[in-house]
Amino acid sequence: MNGAWPVTDLSAALAPLLPGLRVEIVPEIDSTNTELMRRARAGDTAPVLLVAERQTAGRGRLGRPWDSVRGDRPGTQAVALTFSLGLPFAPKDWSGLSLAVGASVADGLDPDGTAGVRLKWPNDLWMADDRKLAGILIETASPVAGSGAAAATAVAPRQLVIGIGINIGPRDAQGLRAPPAWVREWRPDATAGDVLRDIAPPLLRDVLAFGTRGLAPFAERFAARDALRGREVDLSDGTTGQCEGIGWGGELRVRTAAGLQSIVSSDISVRPRRAGD
Image 1: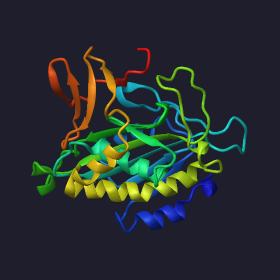
Image 2 (image 1 turned 60 degrees about the horizontal axis):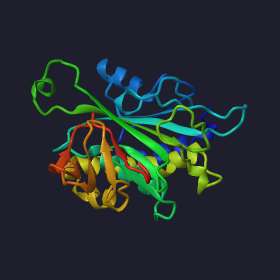
Image 3 (image 1 turned 45 degrees about the horizontal axis):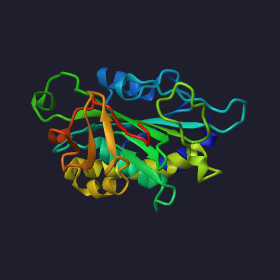
């Protein structure tokens, strides 16, 4: 099973960044995020990169499903990469973490920007034609209560779980809110293992950097790929306006009839207005 996955290479690249982090590959699971949240609530907070060859109950933001499959026939390549990174985390400020993660993954997939990978606030990767390439789901769990100084302090790390799903090959668009895009459009020979090897080490490095420096080092990287900036957008609360990019706290700035509004709630969905709308 692990032959298609660069476990040795990944472990060697990740260990210097976070000693003790292990790489796990499973053939099938309900959801990598759900599994790591279960572990955290049971007291297992060891850092881990958990990869699933198939998810049966994957989740995206707002509870939307994100399932993945291997190929339709034995031996065919995976059409999606689904994995979660879990680690204890205590940043100075959590604001904008999903934007930093998005910028890291986008740069790993499209280093020079020629493929046209864009970032849609707060946690999706799109292509320039508004097709969805990948999604990010960030969750946290409180440390298990116990005795000792770590349990007593108010700044004890929370368990951070970052789930990422990336389309590697073509997938059925039925039931999807946005048409799908996939990595093999510009990397025809890419495998899920290749992509994981490319993005996982810089992702961990960037998450650790966010922990000490916050969003500031990533703001320009996000802005360079911002899929909404300068566009008319519709918000799920009925508000419409023109997007003016993100603020330094990761909030989305939208110029509406009532003035400039800062959107901070992840419960609000943002959709760009297309020609003719």
